[in-house]
Image (cartoon, rainbow, N blue to C red):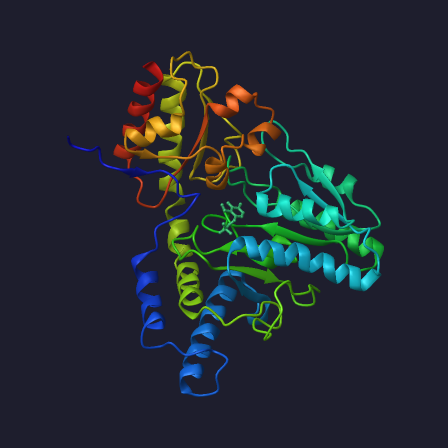
Length: 392
Ligand code: PLP
């Protein structure tokens, strides 16, 4: 039997490594194997590669060399930002009753870290996101208190693609801070899904801390980074030999850092494809809504990542009771329910629940995320497969 061609629509979960990125990494798995901490020429070669990588990444975020910290993933970067900032705030105020403001639609890396800190006595305010999937800047403003040490609001949501008003939130945090005449609250953003398409000038965004990942930008898995504005005090969460300006100990993973930086250097090319990807995304949404009675889009179409469509078939009259994801996979289409991490855990999406969907709608929603090689034929193929599956 001829198997259908496999089509990948899960670029928000992970992207293929760009061939140029892979090429840039290869020498550091082979002949250039030195430890960047070693004094000899092998070590120097590795150190130079890391320095060059840091410069490339700093150029992208329009910041200085020492403001970039490489980590083992975006999750680790988020942990370093949140736990590191809170630990530093304890040292500054000698009080565990510091306060974090975050939102219901954050990735688990943020929410679980905040919940864990809550168990240690930190106060956590979790703001709602409206039915459209946006955190309201005025809600952030009202949540700020005398003991607020950190605000962590994502730049773009991984499930519904909504782009949060980061610049406005940054201004609110800054105004509150200067009114109070101190260094707190700090502002962290999880920019993992945003860097492919959105402005990432750190100063313009008004953030103190920003997390990013290699695997979402056609770079390798197992590497991420944190922008930390000069003068922002965070404590390390991994201690040891003091790599990464004393903030992330452990022998530097040279090939992955080189690959991450090469992927970052290719981002301006990616941004040029945003219009084309958005057109394909819009074709998918329009066709699905027109041709599948009852189908809806989750989250706002305005201020949405160009590669994200989260489709809701909760009101579609169809006989299919099994998973749409499995049915689509059998038809050759790799899509996801909410975030990849949640799909396997079979937990209902906290993001879709937060924007007011019923359990039935959550169950019958899928996230389609497009990449730079997605074609119109693939989009049309997916629509036809969806029609067939839902009619069955
Ligand atoms: N934040 C967001 C918005 C994400 O989409 C993801 C991954 O899906 C992460 C954080 C965690 O990234 P990683 O699994 O690379 O650590």
